[in-house]
Image (cartoon, rainbow, N blue to C red; front, side, top):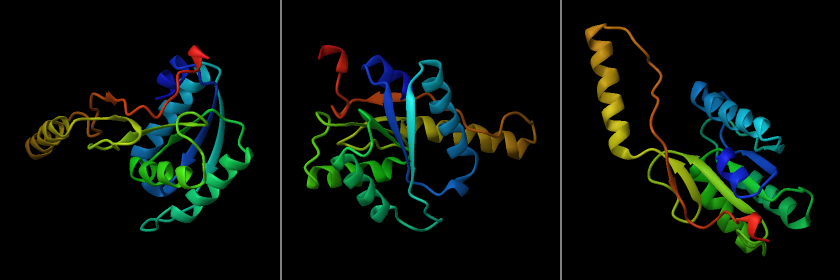
Amino acid sequence: AASYLHLMGHRKIALLYNEPRSQGRSLAFRLRGFETVAAIHKMTIEEFDCKIRPGEKADRAIDEFAKKIRSGEFDVTAVFVISHSGAKYRAARLAEYGVEVPRTVSIVTGGNFPPVETVTTFASEAAAYAHAVTELVERLLNRSGGETQLSLPVSLFDHQSVANLNLK
């Protein structure tokens, strides 16, 4: 996602944590990958943590974030939303606050399949999940060792929520 935003001309990105920090390794890997690529491209990242606990929804915090985007408190051109489930809600809330996506701010997310139909999403296909889980279970049952972290190919589902700033 960071490489894609850089390719599209974005240099100032907001990182919206709309999942509990306790989500573990999956969230940590996603964040580390995004932050590493952003640092390589010398992109600026502003973080906004919804500070939610497991089982809570981030709706109230996302509303607060949308207000800050509208007021110009965040000087960013794009937002990477950690959880794709919150990305759809966030896009709708921005529209309600009169913030045009992608004209005013771009949104991109990553996560599980299916992708958010209104937000450009980096996700893995359901068939890839099924195949990877099947292989993992076989390795575990056979005690053959090997990697226990699933690593899946990712596809871009472009739903036109990221502006190409190179054209301006």
